[in-house]
Amino acid sequence: MFVYTRSAKSLLRAISISTSTTNPETISLLFPKTLNPNFNNNKFDVEFQWLNRKISTSSSAARGGGGGGVWRNPNSISIWRRKKEIGKEGLIVAKELKRLQSNPVRLQRCIQSHVSRLLKSDLVSVLAEFQRQDQVFLSMKLYDVVRKEIWYRPDMFFYRDMLMMLARNKKVDEAKRVWEDLKREEVLFDQHTFGDIMRAFLDNELPGEAMEIYAEMRQSPDPPLSLPFRVILKGLIPYPELREKIKADFLELFPGYSVYDPPEDLFEDQDWKTESDLD
Image (cartoon, rainbow, N blue to C red; front, side, top):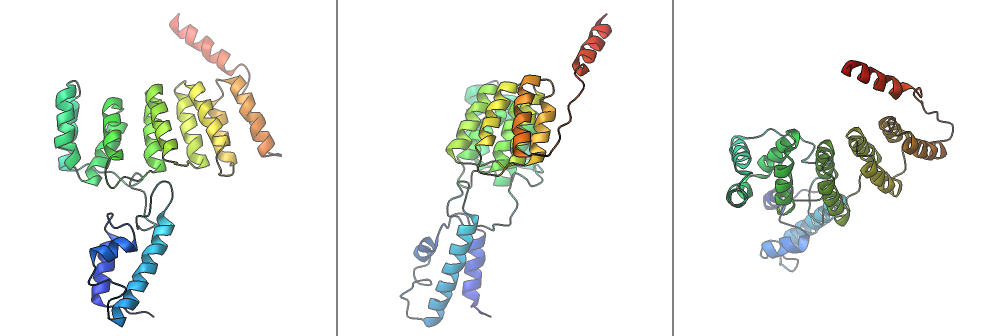
């Protein structure tokens, strides 16, 4: 078992919590006297090689989705999936943003002077709260702020939450802009996320946008799964023509599977009940 010195332990711990150190070369620049491969000390030479392998391996595991070469724990949970409890400073900033949203000049000043100073956890929690409240305008403002932060890394869950909030509020133009951003950053959705986002658009009567997402889903490198298709087919019940198209794709991809078809007069009965209620 390899035993390394206290200095190496401290350095490794510092590197593990730092997002500014990108590679071993940067570390050698930050610590030229301590971690210099030509330094005349065999013990430090061994430790440098060990740290170099450790960082390179972790960087490779954590790389992907536009994450670059930043060393971070590949098993860590995405910040967009963690429980987001808003702190005191985040609450103050959120209230101020809501108060100033009708004044573009003062709102921008608040973003520059207060939002930019928020800790990562507070900024994430404020954005999540605005999404929960369907504050589209403020969510888009913080969306822009987050993507400019030094700690920002393209993340599937970050974009999923934005798209589902925009779908709930039927904001097509904003949704297209967010979709273009995620494609530019080469973010890949898994099949379940594709199904959830499509269902959000379908449930909010945006079948055209849902079908555009379906086209992206079919081009995804991930292998298709049956459950997302079933979620989509259920959301397509009010759109029988579109449903037949995706049903045909489903049966082709999963031969031997069956699809539940609702009675043809299901929506006719609902329309009749609605007209009766109005009378």
